[in-house]
Image (cartoon, rainbow, N blue to C red; front, side, top):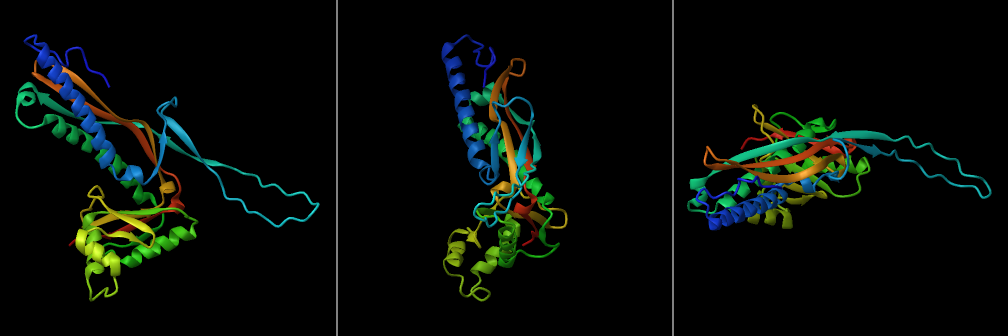
Length: 289
């Protein structure tokens, strides 16, 4: 991160105002970085590759096939298995967002450091999430259909499919809040689900679905709703999707003297890709109340 020579220049020559602006920009950057890291849901659910120190814009992620062990006979040499690897290419590119902080706004009331930092951080976090969520549509296995409401049975079916594909670790489900509504309604309906227990009570208290069939269920408005009122969420293991981070977040300030303002330019450099199609299931369900 860097400031241009005029970014914190005081038109009146006052060193105090220059220091105030410098502190303001430092606080904006800190708040924006914190927001970008904390507000991205998907970053914590997929496989991350930090390639900041790797030359080039593309990385090759190797995929190793499974091999089978066999019974051995004493005094007999083992037979070898040829391991042929494949790879997935992940190419990074730039994304960015800009806001303009006028001199009058910087001198005004409120807390522009927190407010603008949050706006910029949210912009980058939202872009990252939407790019990763767009990969849901690429999973070849899909459950649900147009106008079909989400139920617990969808999650159990997805869990069974992924476990059968040898997913052994954690699984996550990301849904549009409108798509998750019917799931929550079933969990809190004592007539439809009289034995919901702790999960039912948690949904009624906090509106949080929790873990179902070993799947951590999350809601995100970044899962789009199409023109027919349906959305495409997914259940997946971390190994299903990947993000390669060249630069997770950067913010640079540039002075525009004629505008009497400073441009705040937030950028990130990354790429996303599907790693293993067997480790993800699309949920195509109704997203209407």
